[in-house]
Amino acid sequence: MKIRKVLLANHFFFTKSGSVHGPANVICEYFRKRKKQYILLNYPLIFGRKPYYEKYDGKSVFYKDFGINIALPLPVKSFLEILNSIIVGIFFRPDIYIGVDPLNAVAGLFLKGLGFVKKTLFYSVDYTPTRFENGLLNSAYQVIDRFSARFSDEVWNVSTRIIELRVKQNIKEEKIKFLPNSPNFGACPRLPISKVDKNKIVMVAGLTHNPVFSLVLESFASVSRKHPKLTMNIIGTGKYEANLRKIVDNMGLSSKIKFLGQLENKEVLREVAKCRLGLALYPYSKRFSWVYYGDSKKTREYLACGVPVVMNDVVATSEDVKKYEAGIVIKPTVKELSRALNLLLTDNDYWLNCRKNAIRLAKDYDLERILDKVFL
Image (cartoon, rainbow, N blue to C red):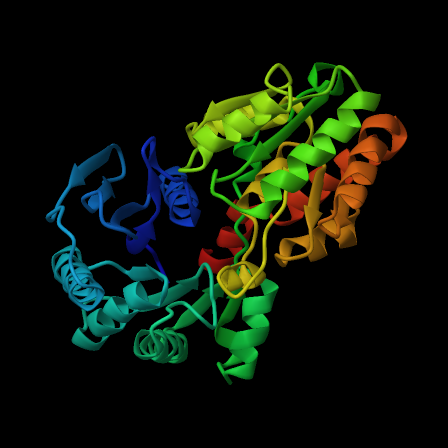
């Protein structure tokens, strides 16, 4: 099928520093490179920012806010977003509609039923059995997710664990595609080994109150006694940042740990590429159940920059890291994290092999290559 125009509908997360770069942004970068016209409809996950659209006409990119910035009940908000996507689709008449999450996928099904789009894709970037604490809302979410998966022309899944779920849901296997949360490999900087700081660790994370930071700081303090030149950059922001800075200061680590804040994605990649290794540690509980089905974007970006990763096995990405030996997968304890850090900081041959494998893994899962197989 010849593709001229694409409509994407997405929900985005944002902080005080701006929107967080996500899978929809990577897909738009792909379409710009291929000179395909598209409109990206971006709806905020939470109240606090207006929705906006990004339009590419084959030559230039335009951005514009739309809608109103008021708190609405979730059912009303969702209905208005679906209605807006349908209206835009009627006027834009895309060849392909991509709905990033179940609600956005529903709008594509309406558009196809009305004859305004040729093909609908449901991009399942995450999943959780307990999206909402409210039982009624959670049941509605499950019904909409299954409905979107069953009736969309293709179901893109960000992790192998979601693929396993789709198979159990009896979704036709020919419709199920694997699109990990990978960057464009060619767009990620990889420095010569001589330019990599052998004493620098990086951690890209939302700064929220969870046990991961206690683990990281205690391990870092322990390891830095053996490696006195060791430093760490923390990239990200969040409501816990001020408290975290105080803890770092009280531990006497403020000269070794730098907070870089939220950066533009290209700047994140440049900073990551300078570092010897990256940390990707995730909590898991009923509250964070979506993490189990997720694919770690930051891990994929570390790897694409040639940076070996130390991570726990909560997200499905850890299975690739193990398979390729592109880093070390640990249990989230101070002892295991300290051991992994010491090994990658001390054994240069081991680090070089992990770096080589990280690059190989990232190249194999380059999203641009995967999308070429899907669309060409």
